[in-house]
Image 1 (cartoon, rainbow, N blue to C red):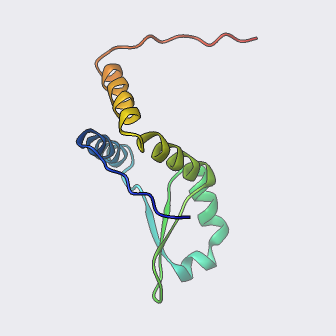
Image 2 (tube, helix red, strand yellow):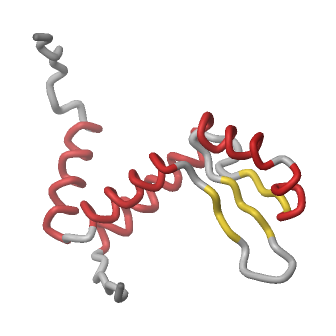
Amino acid sequence: MGRIKISWNKSVQDFVQMKRNFQIQENSSIMEVTTYSKFRENMKSYLDDVVNDSRPLYVTRTNGEDVVVLSKSDYEGLQETYYLMSSPKNAERLLHALKELDEGGGVKRDLIEE
């Protein structure tokens, strides 16, 4: 698969920064850090925490690039966000909708159960 180069406009960059700031405020520690050796020793526990807490795990390695472990659902969410934000026009629409919601717009509705 080839690399895709995306031209990010200023509002998309602002959105990404806003999400980062929100995550930092919501979680005192976004990502736990451990060594490869500790990860191997406690793999089940670490993987359970990654899934249950919906928080990535940063694994440092002495001889190789560090890695990040995240749940499949979190990975799919990141892929979906990347896809939605890859179109500047769609990104603008999403940012506008978020801004409108933040300013009190929008209507809360109950779902109809069948």
